Length: 215
Image (cartoon, rainbow, N blue to C red; front, side, top):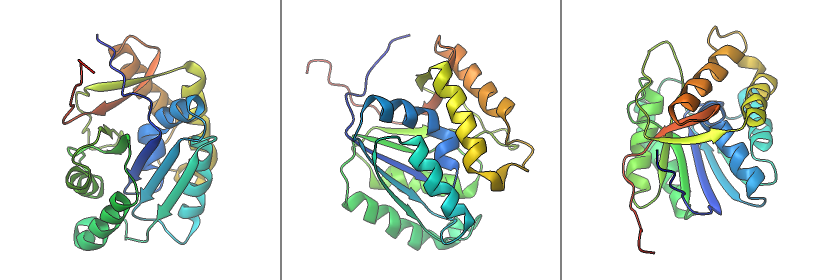
């Protein structure tokens, strides 16, 4: 396996259809990056959950997942599960995000995700961020839609454990869900770690990657 770096990102965009998507899909990566790069700017956009308990959870959670970062979070109020019917609102939010930042790295859902909200947001990101490194995170669910990832971020054991602890601590509204537990999160991280010769890892799809091997 070849290890290819993405440079030293100073600006990161992270988007989710729902509060907790970013933390579940890329929380370990954000922890790893922000601890290594104090002051990194993270522009985060979440399409649903605004104005209530879920937004409060998300703000506290992402602050914990992005220690020392310049975090700028927007949480909208689009109805959960209805993103295709609110396409124009979601598109406008993504375009506004694109206008105010020029990121080195984008974290977004997978275009093959079975959830219509995740998939719709993924498609919007594809058109808005055309010339950027976009890592598409995965979220385990009953649909059985996990794929064969093409990029990995190894996680130290401390970071993997911290991710699970923060997920449990900051999203009490989700604890009743049968899939929302330590075994699910660490189990997937362990499998992805095996695939990249690490103890734990988060995995991503990469649609396009432009190389600069002579630079």
